[in-house]
Image (tube, rainbow, N blue to C red; front, side):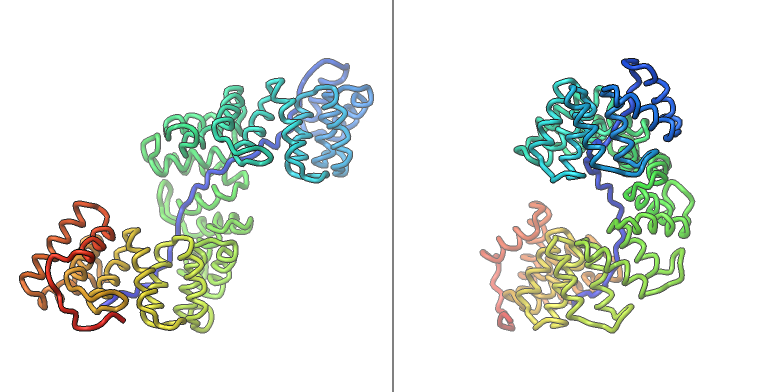
Length: 482
């Protein structure tokens, strides 16, 4: 017999992304009288005074003031936002060779803010600033190499630029360099080096790095696993509004890891992240509504959040929305819609969706019954060591559905599945016992030998295929392949 649990899944995910250094820095120089006063006013957020002081200095031709005044126009600080005026001022300062303005002008072309997006011009202005050793530009040009934007993708060049900027203390570059070490791009994976650079960035208050350092503590990568320290780093990043950290902080509250379990706090942080459009948080908030954790149980609200995640392409949200249609929770049961969403998730390699899709094909729910298609999806899930799929694949072999009937292969699959997951949701243990009672000693010997081969090779499907092509014992199928 096959198994049919339809489980929901909540996941924590770090998604350590590279971020552009969209930073426009105040520089305290004394090239013109009054610049110190202007910078002091800006730092204390007295934007009206700062705007007046910088405006006067900019008219005198100060590139520092021109750049800073451009920043104020770009951000609407002390003046109505005016991107065109910001561009004009950046150009004036950049033309005088002021590196920060060259970086800022490059950023405008890179993002297409106030101008048509132009990677070639972005690279040109970044390169001029890089030639002067500007750390922001080094990071940003590194990002262009990393993403292959306007330049051939080159992780080694990106790494070199991130490193130069990181060694100057640039928090964005430190986070990005940490990611290169974490992911092993252009260098060998080195969690200790990743942790070192994430920490340097995090201690400067950079939210993505704080999240990443928390992730390393949560997973014990480069440091001893410590959920309390994970909480310590996720929290300040979340409080800065960083959606990924909000999601991860919610997960700690939901699971009670590193902090007292608190469903209401979990729901709060999931919602803050979900409201920013973060798909994993939308799925998690859907789970809170589905289970009535921190909120009143509400299948309609659960479906709403699963759908928002699913429509962003989240395989997790797609799978869970499929389950809602499959079970008729939140709307009338609709197997065709379930198959639609399972298919989208399964095509992205999401293992439980592959299993569910296999089940739908095996039983003709929402699709024309197709045993071969069921076998295909069960195999894909089995390749990811999904115990229920392995059991169901065994059932297909026992009954000769979509494959040549084989008690030997069925027993081996039941055995592997039962060993992996002996729980009551999985029928592999009882299936193995029932099949064993029907097998001859020769078939049992062959099945146990196949189990041994699977354990030895650690590649279950390859061992099965090898046996199918050259069985060690003759089996007379009682059914033809269906």
